[in-house]
Length: 594
Image (cartoon, rainbow, N blue to C red; front, side):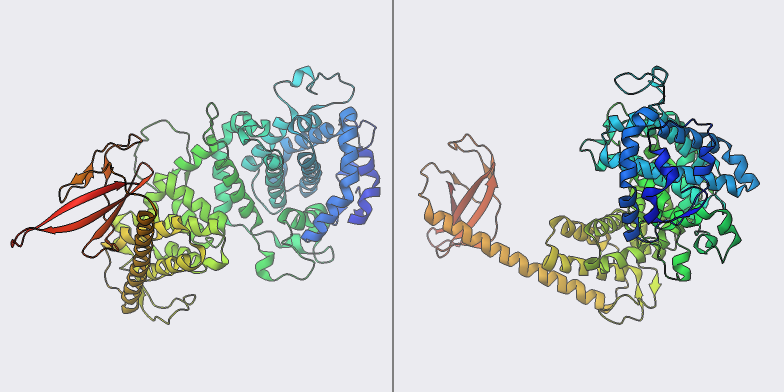
């Protein structure tokens, strides 16, 4: 690296990197930092090259981890970034691209080094790498006495959060925002390499309880705003130095972002317009929202302000003056824009998870969704997920189905889906249907999911949720297409056949058990119609429940009933007893405790 352009093959012998990872301490005010951060690095453009980058820098990172304990150069690098980050807000307003470029380069190096530390060191050693300084005595924890409570790692995390909140997203800061998010994700990924709950890691406690937690509401708002706006990656980041003058000014941003940070979505080939305009900032913002909302959720003594903010934000377009019933830190955002963005991005499982969290826990957003007249905008993408279940992962299918189940609990939703008429559904291949209601299509897709589950997955929870969704909406079925009615009848017939087979299996099992085991003399006789009894079971069991299963026994004019109570199976033989010429039939019940 340095002022000249570097390639992956040259990194292991790169002089500035060798000095950074060497045994010589570098003062934060040394001109070396300007030289190091003025590099133009042709970073990888696909996942294979990303692995090559890690292999090429493995020796340097290992040497850095060893020598940094004495030199403190990592701390000096972070201090250099912190100084520039503090001044970045004014820099962004002045569009000082060179200053932004060098700040990005510093953060890029920090993130690459942190990734190695997280993967190879324990958290205790990781924090030591942040806090150690040259020529300063350290205690057994690796920190100087003045840093026992405010470590450099927490300062870095706080600075990154403030950068994402305060620095506007413009063309020259787009890559810096993405790199800041990726650095935070790398630091929180420590849980992937050490088997213990997130709450026990200091980096998670810094996020939940540290100085940055006071920005929880505005931070979540900024991340949601990034997701809503779906801002495309600036086109100049894809152009070569011959094509763009801006590329020559921000060479590191242009070359360093696309592959390493997009995990291989980039390529050296000429990209289509859709590929060039990938909204990577929106995607990374959404991923970080989910990381913050789904860690440290139920731990006693640890409050998650980000999760609370996500579940309590309100509609900025709502003019009502309703006051909250309790004091909750929250923010406002445009529900209409959020709803539109979610509907357009439901093909991704991370967006589906966000929708599930909002429908399940944010009462304001749930009420807004249920009040929409354009319900098809949300329901159709969900149905498409279920329709293509064989091509989706099980988590995506579950989330989509549970969202439908939650929505089906609302009476207005169950009615409104039958009032929306669809003309064509291009992805529905079973049969060409020119006109069908949204409710009818919903029934068809859920029935198809049930049948697919019965033949392939055999997941009882998926089966139960599908049937529950149909049961919730069944009272409001109307204007059904003939094909929909046919599929309902077909499903009923299929379920009846399966039920009959199960009954037959129970009958055969009961008969075999009776023939194999001797009759127990301690039985009770019950009057007709009695459904329970108290008996002197050898194990002290009481209050057995009789559950008729409509099974015919092997003996003529007899029926066998089966029941389960306290882990024991009870077979009951019912025999008719006709007395005299009266048409009245009396029954006696022999209960055998097996």
